[in-house]
Every structure is written in structure tokens, then in C-alpha cells.
Length: 217
Image (cartoon, rainbow, N blue to C red):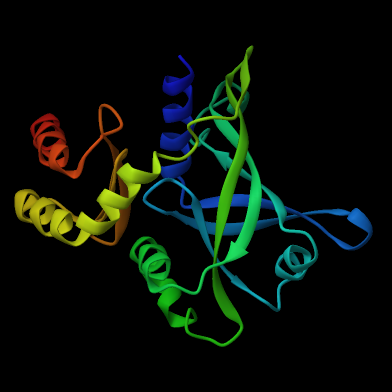
């Protein structure tokens, strides 16, 4: 049951391209900002932030953050829809891999991602508060990221996986990221998240899931 709840949290987060970022301002005053998000292979959130922004200065003082992911879009009563508040700590990442994943999801950010004041940050998840609607709420502290060996295997195989997936998709969209929980697609300039039926244990299982998705669509 806990594993299913953790997967539901990861799937909801991965389906979001934006979130509300909460940081502690001067004197501990709460501050909330709208940010665009991408995700590492293991589901750790990736942000591209400017050091000129208040939230980045707040992070430099206190790396504890929270992100609100909203899955209630399109509902007449948002209170009946799912949302997740993720608590964790945030830090800079100077590697190119996370930058590539962020820009794959937000290609227009390439216009300013190279500016000197911008940097990639990754959030290390701590715990999450999941709300699925009225009377459906719980704290989740385990399984918020995929197992490290599985994530490492997917990261190492991602280039080959993307080539294989895009070959299978033909012209029905282009995969820009693959992970154990699903894949990110772009089609005619629009982003789509396609979830797998389960969290995968190995890259070799991806193509079976892609076949199911293409058959279903």
C-alpha cells in the first residue's frame, strides 16, 4: 500500500511542469514563488533558478524548501482533486545531466539558462503530504524516489532508450526523457507525460510499456 501511494506521488509530481516553491525569507517569513520544474531519473525535482531572485537568496540562508504540485486542473471543484506538498532540502548541481533534463522539458529556458546568474538546483525529497480529495490525506516518507541502482541504470541507458522509443513512436510525438515511472513526450510543441502501468525495475522493460501505450492510444 505504501509503495502504491509513493508511486502515485511520483506520478503526480512528474506530470507537473510547474510548482509553488516555499522558502524561508528574512526573519523566517514564508515566501512562495511559481517555478518551472523537471525531474531527475529517480524523481528528485530539478529547478533552474536565478541568484537574483528572492527565493534563491532564501535558499542560500536555509536550504529547507517545500514544493506544492497541483493535479486539480480542469476540475469544477479543486478540493476534490489530487495535490502533493513535498518537503526537502535543495542544493546546486553543476553537472550537465540535470541541465539537459530540465531543458528537454522546458526548451524555451535555453534562452537564459546560460546566463551567469542562473544555476540548476535539485531537491532531495524528505517527506510528502498527499491529498487525493475530501478525506483522503496522508504523509509519505518512503519511496519518494526510485531505488538508486534502478535510477542509475536508467540514467546510463537513457540515450539508447530515447532512440529506441522514438523509433517506435514514429511521428506520434518525440520522447525527450525516460525514467522508471514513464516518459516525457513533446508533440507539436506541447508536453505530455505518459505513465507506465508500474514502476519499472530495469531499462529492458521500457519497450513493452511503450508498446502498450502506443496500442492504447
